[in-house]
Length: 296
Image (cartoon, rainbow, N blue to C red):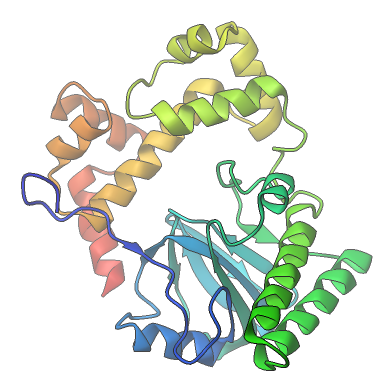
C-alpha cells in the first residue's frame, strides 16, 4: 500500500524451493508449477518478478508475455526475464517440456554480473536462440547444472558453490550470444549513458533536451545514437519507457489514472490520457479493463 492506502506494485520475491539447497532453483516445468503452488501463487497469473528467470524449451511450444508483449518459445529457444519485468505464461506449461533457472539479484559475483551486464536495463527482446557451437555449449552447461542441482554430494557449502558457478557459466554464455543484448553491446557510449539516465529519470522528465543537458551531448547526438542502437529516436525511447511503466501500474495497482499520471511526471490527467491513447491506441481505463480480463 502507498501512503494513501492504494495497492501498489507487488513484486514476487525469490524464495528457495521447499527442501532444496539455498541459492538458485533449477526446475522442470512441473516443478516450476509445484513451486508456485507451494508459495500460494498461480503460475499462469501475471507476476512482476524480483529475480532472474531463464526458461528454455526442449520440445513443444510455450507462449509467454513479458511486459505485455507476446512471445513464442520453441525448441532450443531461451527466454530471459529480468527483475522488475512482468511475466505471464500464456499457454499451459504441460504443452512443452523444458527447464527454468531462477536466481536472485546479487547471487552471482560482481565480476560475473559486470561481464554479463546484469546492471543494465533489460534488452528489448527477452528471446535468444543459440545456434551451432553456441547451442551445444549452452546445452552442455545446462546438463551439468541440472545434474549438479539434483545431486548433493559432499558438504552442502560445496554443492551451493558448484551450482552458483554453473549458473554463472550459463548466464555468461547466454549474455554473449549474437544479438542477446539487442544492440546494446554495439551501442555507443552516448546511448549507454542515455539508457541508464532514462531508466533513472523517466518519471521526472520526458524531454530529450533535459537528458542531453545533463549528459553533455547534443539532442542530435542522442537521437542518432539511439536510432543506431535500437532503431528509434531518443524521444520515442523515453516515451516507450514511460508507457511501459504506465501499463505496469495500471495492471498491478489500483491507482487511478490521475495518480499514475502524476507518478510518471504528467502535469494533469488529460495530458496523460492523451499520451497513453496516442501511444497505445486505447485509454488507460480501457487498457486496465482489457488487461484485467486477460488475467482471469
